[in-house]
Image (cartoon, rainbow, N blue to C red; front, side, top):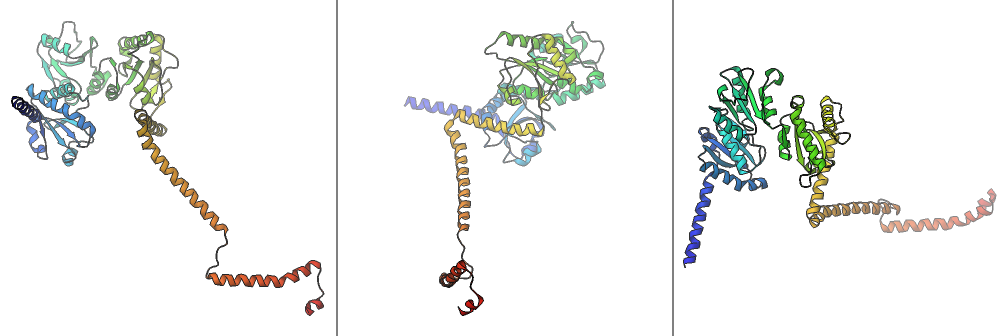
Length: 452
């Protein structure tokens, strides 16, 4: 009896905790549009049949619990975009799941990894002020330790500050923005003039130049990554939004070789020592393995090797010979920059057809590798049915042709009438037989013919 009571108590507690967690995520309906304006909302627009949405669901409840327990002002909700398609369309939902942070009249799309920590960090960053103040050197140093890339506006009110605030409101989905007085900066920082916008990264700092760097938003978008990165598929997608070419050392970290380490070191040195030459146009990094690159270029690159990708038009560049030195790598990058290097791939019609065929083949091969029996059923059965249909069509055409060889019946005659007509033809042939034999012997005189 005691065990039964204990199990019931555990069930009640589990149900309570489950309902408490679910309470952190609110189910939203069509009244949400009118009630949301006074709060900051993090909303998951989902479809009940979507597999990715189902995978996100437990993570989403963890996000709700984390934001609630930390005292965040962000409220977490979810909306069935298929049931409330009109409202989902108003928020610009075009796929599932779509994560948006709604703040006043602004809606910010989340494009990062679907993990609890990344989503919570996004919500806290975007929900706060676009530009945060750094009032002291201690606070400045604390933020330098927390962030790999730090954007700071230094100075008083100015037109540059207004541009900075606008850029921060637009790009806060990607990074943090701060402001500080000159006294709050580290002593090692020396700025030629104020006001200024400075990015701190890669162990140094770099200043925005309005004349050389054009738009402040474009400059921030290009500088929001470290100069050298470990690149994967998601990072490569994000780098595509910067408009930069991506120079990658393809290595195998599970089986490191001297050649792999040398290429990685050369790429790191170029990123640092040639920043002034290549930073505006190139992003540098390394990628573990060549599987992703092979599927991207629909070919095969060796490991280790170097490749440069243009994500805007799907072109790629390969060195004509193995990279052995710093000078060779710099020369290869320069040839891509000045347009003398051979470009491969692209987004033309032939490449698109090739992409469709490549994706179809990859899908078929993956199915056969994972489950040969399933692959035979999915692809063998349709092929068998098509073969039988083709065989039936060919056989039917052959039968029709053989029927045409036989003499057709004369239209309008019955079987009895045809038999009578055949007998008459035979009698006429019997009467004409002797004449034909006489003609073989020789022609008769006209008088003899009359006598006959």
